[in-house]
Structure formats: structure tokens, C-alpha cells
Length: 288
Image (cartoon, rainbow, N blue to C red; front, side):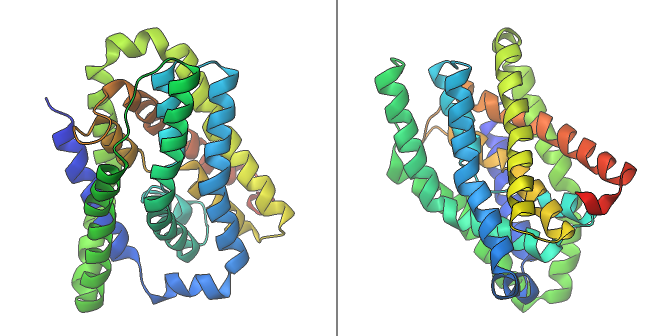
């Protein structure tokens, strides 16, 4: 089975769903709560890549896995984060705003960061990976930006219908992502089983450290508990489908090995965030 044929439509549907979720209330968050928005963006665009880079160097990841962990770190927030934020009693408008903003901002930052990362891997780790920046930008515009804009436009024209469609897509997006990760996991099992100890530890620490750092930054900034929980989830949940699409696309990196950190991330991310929700329900929720 060619998994690329699965990841591309899944990514498109996820971004269309995100567009359907966006409304005026979500974008008002930019004006009403700029500090929380700024902290969330910094967490996603700055903290995540720095953490991934540090962990990749500390654990001496091989070039392809090093590029892969930076790829997931440089991707935008995942659309499922909105559901997790709701379950955590977070700020849904803030969640939607951060996911939408990161999806647009990373159209620019992702090619820049990956160009630097691949250059570093090439010069320091004897890797030979080419990044067609122009094709990467075009693919992200077609698969990420265009479906998102179409979703926003559809919502403005057909509010009631868009709400029903969004509800359906919201229910299938999470299982679709898990199915995608599972297919890749099975197809690359022979490689993964040899590297999972090191890659798995790095991915686990990456997610946990990102959530802790974003939580501490939110607390230092004196955000309320709902905003803190939202930012922890937003920073902890990246768009694994987009990372897999970039790694495996014949037009971009065309390398299944680079996608492995994103695959492991997709599986770990959901388990860790589900554990976070359980933690919230078993302690005084206002303390987190």
C-alpha cells in the first residue's frame, strides 16, 4: 500500500476541518488575549525546534532521524488539539486561533528551519539530503493553506452546513491519523524495531519537555488555568500528518525513514495527552 496516497487526502481534510472551525470569535482572541496567543506561537515556532535540536544532538541521532525530529518540531499545531483542549476545559477559541496561526506561519518557517537543519546534517553528519524549498512551499500551500482558506470561506457561506460537516470530520480526524501512523509503523517495522529505543526515548522526552516548558512559560506569564492548559496541549500536539507528507512526498524529501520520528510522535503524542487529561481529572484542575 502506498501510504502517500493516504496521508495527502488526510492532511487536506484536516486543514479543511480547521478552516470550518474558524469563526470571528476565534480571531477575536488575537485582540482580546494577545499575550496568550504570543506565548502559544513562541512555544510552537521557537521552543519546539530548539528542544528537538538539543535532544537530537544530545542523543546523537543519525542524520535521517535528526532531520525527522526537527521536521515534526517545525510543523504546525494539529487540528485534534482543539478536541483535547475542550476535554481539558481549555480555551477553545485560543486553541483554534493558535492552530490556524501556526498553520499559516509555518508555511514560511518550516522551509527555513528545514533548510538550516538539512544543511547542518549534511555538513556535520555526512548526510546527503536535498530540500527543494520551492516545491515544499508549493506543496504546503496546496495541501495546507488552500484547504484551510476553502474551509473558512465555506463556513462564511454555509454556517449550519459547515457545523455539521465539521462535526463529522472532527470524529474521523483522530482515527484517520492513528490509521496513518499505524500503516507507516507496520510498513517500516523492520527499521523501527532496531531504532525505537533511541528514537522512542527522544520523541517521548521531546513531547514531555515541550509540554513542561510551555506550561512553565504560561505560568510565569500569569495566564489563567484554561489558557495554560490550552497552550500545553497546542504545543504538545503537532501536525504529524503534515510532517509525514513532507517526508514521504515524491516531490520533497521522498524518504520513509525521515517520517519515522513523526510516526512514533503521532502514537506517543496521543497517549501522553490522554494521560494529561486523566491527570487533570484526578487533581485540582486549577493548579495546572
